[in-house]
Image (tube, rainbow, N blue to C red):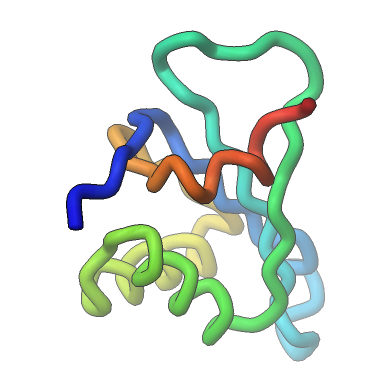
Length: 97
């Protein structure tokens, strides 16, 4: 099945990183490269490392790559992943109506 994708940057921020014993909460913002829409940037909130890892795998990352990004998020409290090919079906959450 050939799924349509949109290229852009995926920013992942560890929202409660100052509370390392709390269940991690991650804010994800995807910015497309072409036909970027102006205005506020809607985001996706995920709770827990497993949820973040599952989501990254769902959008096309290999498990070991997903785990590497999560490790970087925890080391730096956030990352920007360039050249992400986001499945078009995931775009509704990242774009304001």
